[in-house]
Image 1 (cartoon, one colour):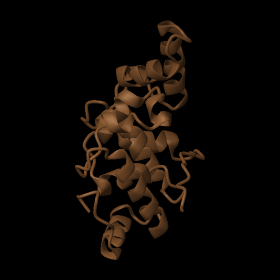
Image 2 (cartoon, one colour; image 1 turned 180 degrees about the horizontal axis):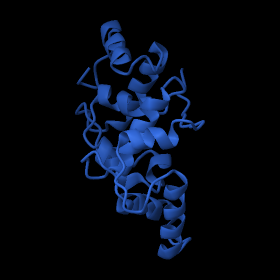
Image 3 (tube, one colour; image 1 turned 90 degrees about the vertical axis):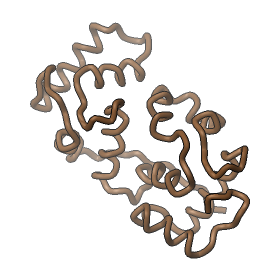
Length: 175
């Protein structure tokens, strides 16, 4: 499975499926493997951030730099695990954990106002002022029962997003 020139065995497919909590069907895993092999241009068994940039939707994503930190050097199993948060079969908990990792840029398990502001800045660019961003973010935090100086952890994200109808789905084409 590490060498992209090899084919997936039934065992490999089942192992990846189990690793990803069955968020993808066996057919979807085979399709993802084919896509992984296309992205792994040097056939090293890993995808670099540069190779991910060849995906147009990823290259133009305003959060691309944050996502690079999460994806650089993924093998196939990790690649599928990364994408599993976007499966229609992923649990809300799994999706919220993924979102939390995007905000927790230093990986310390905590998200401060400055982390939230950085993501909002990435998403809005020059479209709104820094003062407007801070105002919006302060209001959102207050509506959720938090203050500007609150430090959020994963359970806080679950509390805030847990009752939402969070949609983060990507269709995996099956040949």
